[in-house]
Image (cartoon, rainbow, N blue to C red; front, side, top):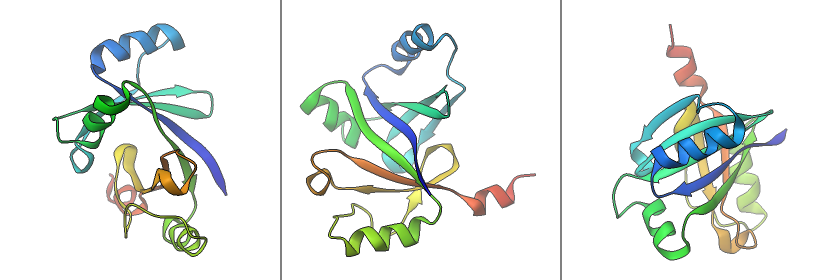
Length: 140
């Protein structure tokens, strides 16, 4: 099964963006989280069965900072939830897609993630994500 899990939006100022999207959706973000491996702070809004993820760079060397400097704020990526990220990565590699990660890594919202290079997906940064079962099993 593949479904849209979230849409990532790059923002300069998370607090201001949170207020804007709170007005737009009629409720506040349900979660804010730092993701050190990506150099971002994120917040999540529930929108029907999907989510919107706002991403603010933690420093000028992060991919989000570079994205905003080059393209400005806006839609950064679309994420698809998959049942088996390892199998999906292997399948997509076999189909000729360029993956930005050799192995999944920890992402926001307790997910394992992998990105596909936009040059192999018609200019769209695609994220694959899967619930991190190992972390879930460690929760009380």
